[in-house]
Picture 1 (tube, rainbow, N blue to C red):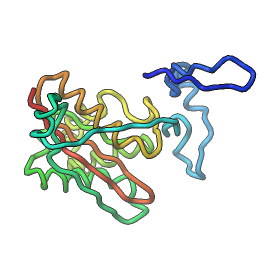
Picture 2 (cartoon, rainbow, N blue to C red):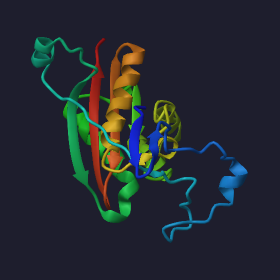
Picture 3 (cartoon, helix red, strand yellow):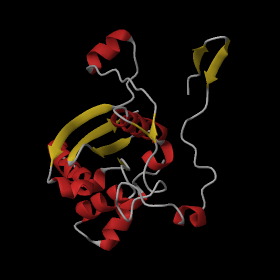
Length: 203
């Protein structure tokens, strides 16, 4: 987090140096009492992300240019894709986007070390995992073990228009922490668009 100084008329500047997303006072009991939102019986403020402020920037270049500049790569983008499905099937979108991008990268899901599926709502990763495992419950549990291991938008927040880049960076740093591997990130968009990206880190 980089502190930001915000000028105030006639006052000392306000220093923003904390993460905007706080859910420290959350318990299952309190969450169960939250009222539904968006006219949906199952969606509450507890299983939807905060819409947060935020900005991201990623420098993308070929490896030769990075080497010429003396920069160390934090990951290689192997494939990216954008899709759209029927609007009332939105939670399935990231699952289908992951299937497509893995085919583009010539990889199998078993080769992927870590996955992030953005939590537009808590149901989205769960439904997309069902797409990925073809409703095989044992396989779903295996996929869940490597999905959203560092949290996603419900825990971290959803800086609208910045979340895709944030997901890619979170995955790249997780792979760097592990020393090598493959990651795939996916996010749904307005109505039933979805995007996915495969990243590799080789140390």
